[in-house]
Image 1 (cartoon, rainbow, N blue to C red):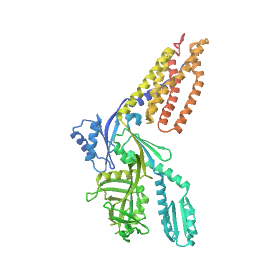
Image 2 (image 1 turned 30 degrees about the vertical axis):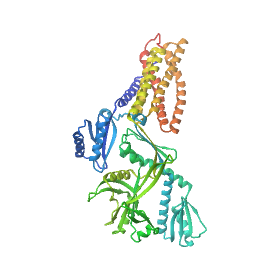
Image 3 (image 1 turned 180 degrees about the vertical axis):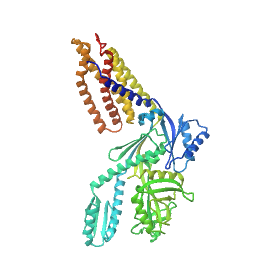
Image 4 (image 1 turned 60 degrees about the vertical axis):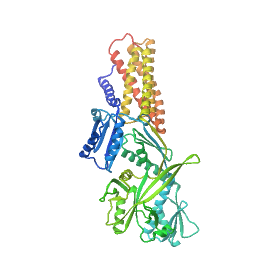
Length: 613
């Protein structure tokens, strides 16, 4: 029978529309200014009750207080109350607690229960902070050279190959052997464990110069950016940001966007800080004053403690920050700020072996941080980067320990808290500089939303008006399908938890204009069939059947372009491409299947003398 859908097809189409309607509903609800309280350890119910009492005693109206999965979320009616309570909780919180500002969705629980959440809003719509970070590639290569320098020295000792020195100089690792006869054994070691180094033999028969190959340098730089992105994601998670955007830009830059973040100072401090620890044995065999005068013993390095006193440390590093798997702050038995550290298997093995062999000897903790200062020189801003290394703690090894231990010597609880966060999130593979910072206020984001919604409403209204005037009742059917098309787009974006930006809104608006193209082709074909003398039922059938190929071809070409935009574009271009792709696919479904279902309901299964088209 012409122009009749079987029951299963009607049920399927209606089910798609109903599901889309439900999953698009969360976007009608707004956000509450909130304060999120989390901890390295789970917050107990008793602690949550104390936090709630503190908020109420402060005389602030609390909209809602939620305790779930060991975290606390306090909702407020305005940002003034939010900021007041965040300052209060930070002053009252212990060293393991993280207090973060956020915007919490107000989606009803029954929608949350079925996994229906609102779309994430991008920085330009929600407000927040944008950082452009530049990875110091030279520092990444230098760190790789330092690792190879230490590894080669340890390998020579392990293989019992006699050598005089292993030093870095002008990009080379210069190895001086005791005798030229040891070269073949050394070359065999290099071929086995250090294949990524280029070998140069100078005139001195006992020397071998090693340098990172071009391939190794490229891999080092590539891995530095990749590891930094992973570390930055971990740090952002510690901040409690729900929908961050962290993307690579070019070869050595990373874009970090934190929508909804209001505490920009805290975000900048956590993201831009490169801090890690190194554990080294103290050199007690040599005179530190001779080292200060310039005679540093081979195998040792001169450092300074926080009070300015010089100290000699062994060049060999026991463990570093990248071997730390967990860190939390607190107080030691003497009430001093401390960081409690857990090592991975490799680090625990090295620490256990070394402490077992050096009981009674002092061990130092070196705190390493890269600081960037901007100074005005001759009227221009000049960024000066400095590596700061200081010994924060020296303690005698009383007994063997490996996986878990504590580090003291920090100035205050806040420093301990920040250091534990950074170590918990992971060490940056190379220092990063914040070369660009932009802040988008919530009011500006709301203004962008209002303008985007206005553009959509005006565009949608013009399309609706055109279709009704030009195609009469059939135009109404097309408009109903168009409305469902928008609902489906919003629902899919919500299900995918995609981030909607201004270009994404532009993609939706463009889809609104393009989605009725299919109906225009179908209706024009129906009108041609009616002019040729076909019956209304036959014209409807032929119009939908014959126009399908043309509709498919035109949408496929546009879809291919949208896919290319998504594949090769970045940032806002991807956002535009995502909404365009989803819009094209959903518009084919609604314009062809949805419109035809409505027309079948009105005109199918009965004798029709005239179509309102």
